[in-house]
Length: 340
Ligand code: DAH
Image (cartoon, rainbow, N blue to C red; front, side, top):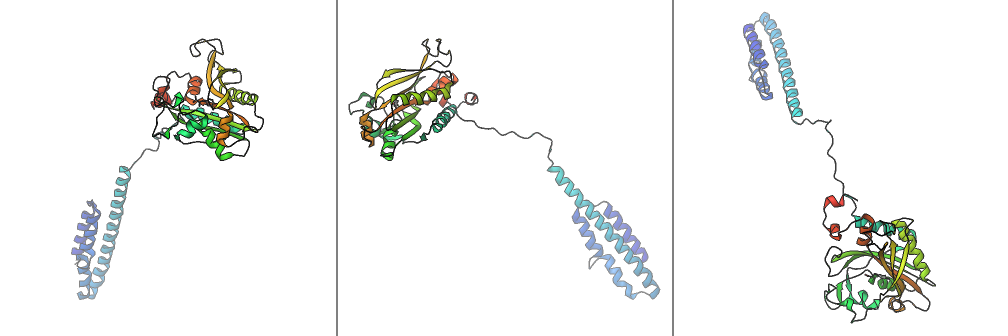
């Protein structure tokens, strides 16, 4: 019996040392210490031994059992640690590697200019409003004093949807829409940025472009108010030293009408390629709101006067950033967009 115990112990020790798998350890545990195991059989047989042998074999088999158990436990622990290490090794990451940088977007130059214009006018007490891009002929032309046979209504220039509807050719229809909503309240001080559409397509004309409309109505608004507000505006957007000049012009919805020029932002008025040698840049159309338009909008032209203006956002951005081809704004070329 005792020999058998020693043999079992030796064999177990040898086997355990070479074990590679957790399952092998578990199998051996069952084989030796399970209900049908070899060691268990010996322990069961003790009761049939003489008293003297009982004591010896009993003591020794308990010792062997304990030894094997602790060997098995130690091996199991070792294999589990190994498995965990292997897993961690496989998932290893280098925390000292530099992080992957995020690619940030940026504001489009037209958005930058629009935001600047909005901020400047908000600072002068104006609010920002918007109108629809699919507009009624009534608001786009008729209520702006452009009669039915006016050449600007020509199919050649406008994208008509049907006889009453078109893609607005200007932001000016927002003037009458605003008046209808506001009347009889005063003052009215709004700007209205947005997209407009015309059948044009070359380096300086796009079928879609952006305008910002302005409208100010109150009692006793004069041309001096128009000049004051627009002067402040161009100084804020182009710099304190910019000069303005007004040339008589014609728009059906203003009377009198003007075009406002600013001194060339590139040559400061000396004359260069950008201003075609004149020293001046045309920047916006404006005028005193035509009394007929006030009536369309629901205001009494005997009591109320005001001024309006409209400017092209692309044009302002081209002058400000020295861009010479309008189409660059719409190409979505990152090399262009990254520069702002
Ligand atoms: N709507 C005009 C255009 O597209 C620009 C304009 C001129 C707007 C004079 C105005 C204005 O409000 O008073 O050419």
